Length: 152
Image (cartoon, rainbow, N blue to C red; front, side, top):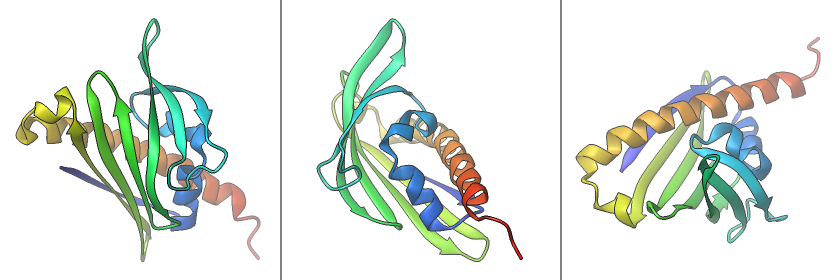
């Protein structure tokens, strides 16, 4: 299981607002090429994002399903990218003195990717999720600046 952490200079609500915008998924998730549809009740449990993975003309169509959500602190997803397989991703947001500590935990649960030994799988997931959290932080911090309004 890969665990990746990043400090975001904003509030957990700002991070979760990005997570709660299913249409932004391809902007921060490395590997997601485009969004085809988002359930109107995203990110409620059972809600889905239909996405494409890869690059044209070799796009794979699949979906991500919300397993559980506790705004603004936790979102658990079942991610699918068949034929490579599927996995579980949990994004946790913890308020700290300098902002929000965002932790992403991911592991393959089914399919060929789950057969790759963890010692080989985890560094690849961590590398990808480091960039994913960088993108998420950029979006959340920008949101925080644009919604904070003028200060007195």
